[in-house]
Every structure is written in structure tokens, then in C-alpha cells.
Length: 218
Image (cartoon, rainbow, N blue to C red; front, side):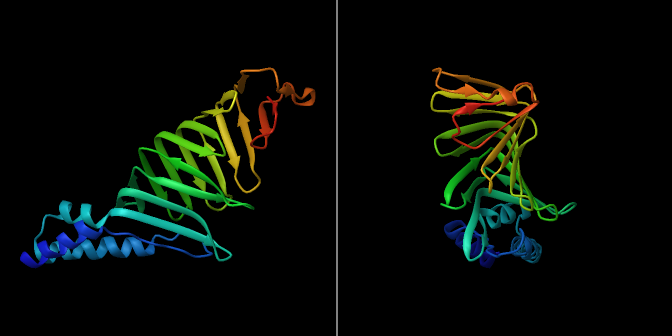
């Protein structure tokens, strides 16, 4: 028991961080191995499993690279792997995605999150806030799809920027192309009449615009 308590003290001091950097897809292999080992140690030592697991899943840091450069980084205060579906649950995730070609950062925070390795998907849940280049997006839920490099708000969201704000029932952000698509009940308002609506887009169900484009569509 003294031995395991000493090990737990080390965990408390240092925390546990998982680093995954590759040109492939999202891989939680290292994290899963750490969880399995922690559970085995808990059984052998008769330590309280919930205490050991909590410490072992503290200070998570996942990162993915592409062509030798960092593509995104995800940190969270705590995490837990659901054994029934291999989904990692996160507490207070903080996600940073580096936009090409200038590597400007998109940051996303939320109360909770989930990582689905097989689907190559990260889900941000509750009080989601995404910021990029002076713009802020608020949403109840946001999904990052690793295969298509898309950020999707399936329940809609609200965007705020300098002098304007807008909302829609569904928002899709194709990050590599820097194109935002807003669908369903698109509503954009401006503080000043410096933006114009393009006639050819009137009546369309959604809006397509690059971040920072000085026009309202939809």
C-alpha cells in the first residue's frame, strides 16, 4: 500500500500527459495502454480504483501533425475511456487548430468533450466557444471531423465579430478552405450599413462566405 501511495504522489505532482504526433489519423493507443496499466496497478495494490483512475487521467494532451508540422493540439483537465465503445470522455477540453497557410489558431473550449477514434471525430459539448481572428462562435455542440477537416455545429450557433453578429440552425466550417456554410434561418445583423447583400444569393437556404468577407449572404 505504501508503494502505491508513493506512486500516486508522483502522479499528483507530475500528472499524466499523452502525446500523439503523426501524419496519420487520430490514435488513442497510448492513452488506452495507460488506462489499462493504471487499472491493473489498482487491482494488484488494492488501491481505490476511482482514485487511481482520476490521477492517471489528469492533464491530457493529444496532438496531431501533418507533413512534419503540428496540425492541432487538444488538452483537457481530466479524461475517462468508456470501455463499451472506446470513446474517451473529456472534462474542460481546450482544442487548438492551426489554419493553413499562415497557421493562425482556431481555439475551441467547452465544458465536456468526447473523442471517437474509429470515426476520427472530436465532440465538444455544452457552452462551446470557438474563436478565430477576432470572431467568436457560441454553440451548444460542435464536432470536429478529422477526415474532412470540418467543424460542424449540428444544433446551430451564434457568430460575433467586430460590428456584426449572426446565427443559423446549422453551421459548417471547412477549415482548410476557410469557408463557412450557414443553413436554416440564417440571420445576420450589422451595427453599420457597410456590408451589402449579394442579389444572386437572395433566397438561398444558406450562406457561404469566407471569414472576414464584407458581405452578408442568406
